[in-house]
Image 1: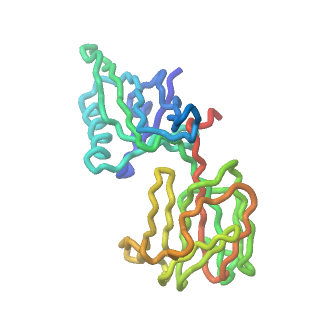
Image 2: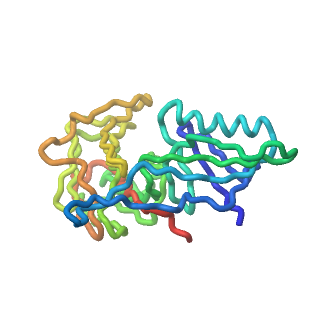
Image 3: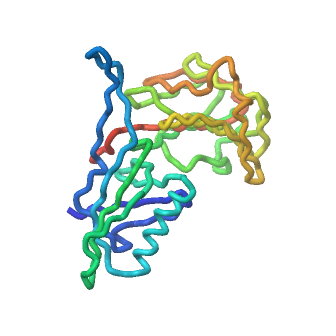
Length: 272
């Protein structure tokens, strides 16, 4: 069965394999393995090492196409920023670190194998939940919103609402706080997420705790500049506590809007 893969590099350039003339049959992108942390004949835990995968391809013999494919993947390597494949709505962040040709004498096609490497070998789907300020009128179309979509929306009236995490495990997340607000504080299931800085109109702060263990706090200014405000976080109570599964009580002043984006992480993307 021919599988259509779509890859986006870190610059946002999209490579649609089938539309470009790149054909994929069997591949091991969905395969996975957990490494075992063991001592004294007992399992202490599990972890994932850097993973290498292969994608056999047949490429239409077109010099421009082949050069474009190489440039598309090499841009990630040169800038050390991974791109990602998308399968059934799940993203897999990785680098293409090799192309091995096995037949390029054919007049119409080139047979090759793409070597894929990832230091965070999980498939991720984003789920966004929005909480609105009490001062926002019913028509909220002017509010800037995160690119992902989620079927639930929450409108604040007293600054207390429920958050439902539909995933069966505690989730990595992004917390996006929209200005204007001073020293915003949000309590989720009794845990405080707080930043000691002002956020102006048309500005936002993004707290990111991703599956590759990166922890960042950035402010995005109205002119497009990005400022590292990691040291402005509440250092007595971590802003990097995962979001627990199930229903969580969320409370805040009600005077600002924010989004919570949960990461659904799987070793292999869902088949449907």
